[in-house]
Amino acid sequence: MKRDVVVLLTRSPYGRVHVPEGLRAARGVAAGFDRHDVSVVFTQDGIYAARAAIDRDALNMTGHLVDLAKEDGDLFVDEASMAARDVTRDEIASDVGVRSGEEIASMIERADHTLDF
Image 1: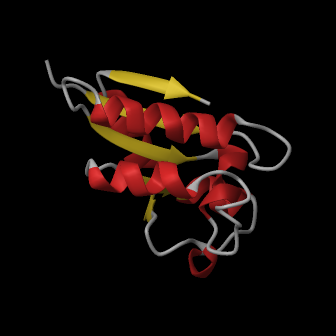
Image 2: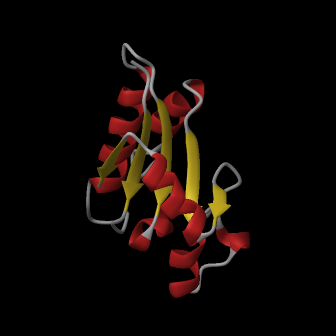
């Protein structure tokens, strides 16, 4: 049975494995037998991984993002977390949509499952 799944990336991308592991989980859920609808949300300190200036290869993100895109996964960043950290829309990668805190909360509320990394 197909489900809506939200993967929350909440931790800083450097010195940790949470961002690439969260993306790997997201792509696995999207490509699995039921091919669930997956949205990845960069929130809290995870927003730093959504920046255009991030070295996606160094963080082992590129392959996961390519595979997730093939499965129609969506990438979003939490605007409230951006504001709290003085990150502007101009700094966010072009493949990541910016959503308000309310939109993110609604997305999480509607999801059948959430995964937190």
